[in-house]
Image (cartoon, rainbow, N blue to C red):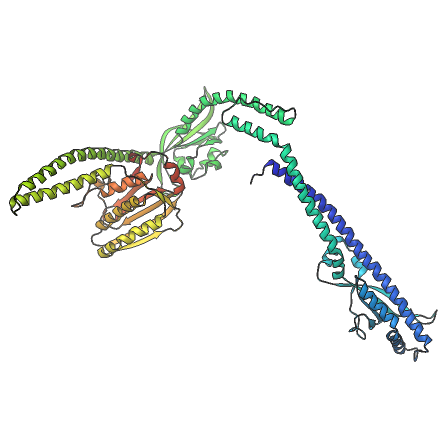
Length: 638
């Protein structure tokens, strides 16, 4: 999605402010985190010394009360210290006070040198081994990212240890450790309010910066709207433009644009003369054109080349002739390369394999382009010979059908007037005859019925030649075919015809007049039914071919004789006794009115296949703006 300049400036400013605020907030949070952890470490150190002091006082109080160890053994000494700690109310109150009132202290314990807990804030620990914990000093020395991971990860406990000794001066021995534990959850609670405040400040800063950037950019870029309008008027051909009355950069740009507009006026006149020549060149690009430079590289490739060489035109640009036409290429029968140069060929015919179809005959010519004796390049031209022959045949069929339609319309009008007069006099004659059954009255009834039949025939002629009123809508060919097959299914079953339908569901919709197309398909199904009086098989398929939808109706009937194939779409032509000769002509005209094509393949004794090709809905929209000319449609016989 293309962003406006104002939006880009606003987003850039917001991003810069966000980056600055983010850096400052990160530094703030980093310092805050380190400070809180360091404070927790200092506090734990202080608490450990305070508890050690109270433990010393507990031992002094025990000595004053006359308590002494039973012996110098470690076990008696440990029992003596345990009793002194248990009997010391100041020690217990100090431990409880530090844990209760300090927001950072999680647990306080005193253990002997073996790790057994003597006294603790956790009443379940005395007499048990103290849990192993990581030293808080490691967290203090960790990096900022690691500290955040620890604080906002699962709760963990870190501790500060203060070892102490007991015994008379000069003969003291290590006895225990004061352990003060700090939990990360408590540290997180201390840091979170500050983090929340930093986030709010960052968001508010970004919001204010976006608002200010939008206001400033709107004011600063205001002249761009007028410059844009100036360019829009120049693009519409209004080259005389007055520049902005400003002395800044915008005014200079506007003045330059006005000068460019004056220059474009002259350039446009030159290109208008060149356009006629370019249109003439492009008009012949139905044929495949390859222009090679003097060094044998393709410098111009028309889009139609892909139909002949089965390679996109953009992949051929810049390639050498011997790479495009290697020795095993089908076109090398006519295209010769000697010493890197193409040999001139006036006219030749080769057979090339199509992208998604059978091989076809193609005309090839190679023309050297030069100035004087200097060779400047080579033009290779491909012509679809089969298409040209088919188009000639198709135009003849369409022209004959159109002429026959006009003649039929004239004859029908000429016949209808005498029929009307005959009916009037016949009514007068009926009125003058006696109301008694007899030969005269019977003759009048026969004449009346025959006039009705002739009038019906004339109406059919007029309906065929009169352009129908089209009511086109996007329709699913799959549903349309299924509906027509459902109508004819009883007739097929009765005639012993097995129907096999392969209708792709992913074919996009087409823009058609449903009743007209249904009647055309019904005519084809009726023809297939009549071609298999002894039963057979009918194959109906629908699939997408590029930007077209293709339907095929193939029977296993008697086929069409070669001498009749050029006439089957002609009005009133029929080989069936009692046939009207209108069905296939009507189907042909219906396909024409939908900008489609109809072709057939037939083999005597093996059957006939009709193929109808219609443009998809999005392809058909542009065709609807063109006048419908029945003579412009395509009917092919292969």
